[in-house]
Length: 283
Image 1 (cartoon, rainbow, N blue to C red):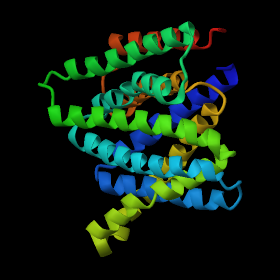
Image 2 (tube, rainbow, N blue to C red):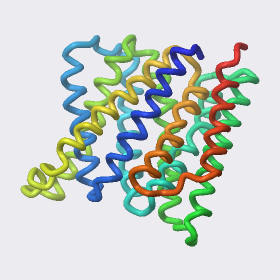
Image 3 (cartoon, one colour):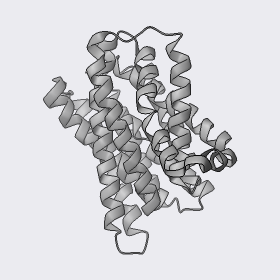
């Protein structure tokens, strides 16, 4: 992984945590994700007119990925409804890197070298530690439905990360791939919201439209950067580095949601830095 690729993924981590915080701040999660998905659909449709059409070999991956992304959004919506941002976000994101490492080795044939493996392990230890601290530090008994929803969200993330890592490489154009992915995945939740809310939907969306569309733009930017990076480096280190968004999410939670940012989160951030250094070590 070159410094340029690492920088792009870190920028993606910041933008990803930001759109998740915007989504969580809108209490009606169906409205929030309707704006994120619908905004992504509009951005993708506009972009599809300007970028190359994905190669035919990429389309099976695009269709599977779109289904996994819809499942991810539904599970994330459920997680945010049941639990606190500071707990659900780390758990959902922290489970993905190690699963991606296994999936990439089994299905893509990518076996990271010793330095990258150590980096993924160290970074994941920080992420998992932060997630467990969030559960322990809440002072309440674990909310198992919320935890299971967050864990399932992490599995969905690992699934679409691996699928997209193969699909974007087959597409011939990372921009074309992200544009059509946004179109395909952006239809389901707005259609469901229209079915559930019917004539009331437009009026309910208006107060949140600006924030939701900003979140959609951040979401497309974040994942577009990740897809570009996946054409230039192995999937597992990118997945681990991308989840540094958890540290950003913890900082956002402390500043905007008045959640604690104590010594365990500082330690987790330190482990992430060490893990990034190991992942960037030359083979």
